[in-house]
Image (cartoon, rainbow, N blue to C red):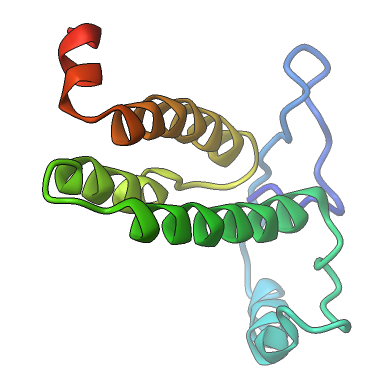
Amino acid sequence: MAPPLIAERDPRTGHLIKRSLNGAWMMPLLKLTARLKGLRGTPFDPFGQSTERRSERCMIDNYETTMRRIFDGLTADNHAVAVQIALLPLEIRGFGHVKAAAAAGAHSKLTDLLSEFTGGPSARAAAE
């Protein structure tokens, strides 16, 4: 595990260093965090203002805005591209720097797909 509050950073990469947190003493802490799950997304969420959580909320807002744009411009010709755009969030997995890298890759793909979506099939042919 690499809990952001106690994990050290690798001086070379800046990524959090994982630590082995095992033993019976961890079970009460894990049970407590499970009970506090109801606080997620509320003003009482202890991690709600972290960079990662703010980024996640921003990605959700951007996705909703993008999908409204897609729905407004959807045609039979660009349906396949719209489906690819709708599925992009499935590529964003992991935590910390792994998730950030996946999000950057998905954003890059989104830019290309939106250009293809608005340009139609001719944009795809030009790209190939």
